[in-house]
Image 1 (cartoon, protein in one colour):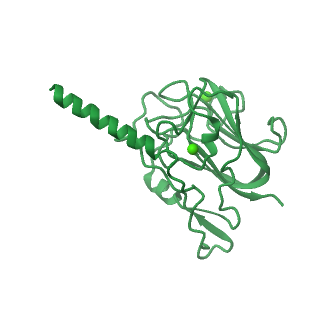
Image 2 (spheres, helix red, strand yellow):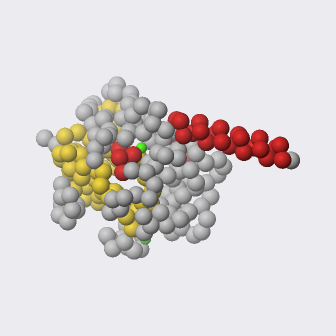
Image 3 (tube, helix red, strand yellow):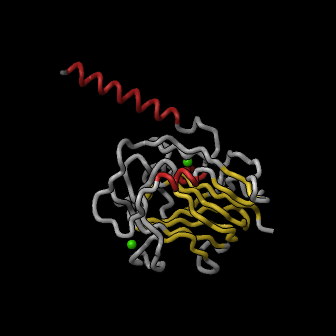
Length: 245
Ligand SMILES: [Ca+2]
Ligand SMILES: [Ca+2]
């Protein structure tokens, strides 16, 4: 029995080091994609981001009673793994851009991991922010027409993050000219307004947010803990857009 236990331990150590060594090695960026024009759609182009491997095994069954929870729809997810944007917006313009946060000194990791272009969720590749209602903010450096945002919180455990509110503005303080793209704070507990969008289970495919060409220099993402704990996590945020004319 002792030997068996040791072997299992050894196995998990090897698995862990393999996982660790993969972090940052993948230089493939999520903006890489098929840039061939979509057949009938004029000046739209396909984007196929690089998705990380799934990290949990089994059916994601969240505990507790989550209001307004989206039903799993694998076909819908499959259909959006390659998505269309206007020509010129097929690059991840968030890559390498500075990130600020309501928690400037994260508990785990550093804020630059959120825009390093690597959606790998292994240990050492994600940021853990303080508990409660927190935000991260990406400065694109100039106003952009933003079409899609692809977001990964954390998907090693089955988790649902609460009160996701994703906003765009040209004001770094988000006091004026704020457009809300996504809000699933169904009871307005975060006092940013009641949101109608669904809660959802995190997966390796991330969450694709429609931005519809909204103009702005800054992207801000709020969350308020998750089903596993009070913490807020980010692996990567990719933004697809082009500089505003
Ligand atoms: Ca990352
Ligand atoms: Ca809420």
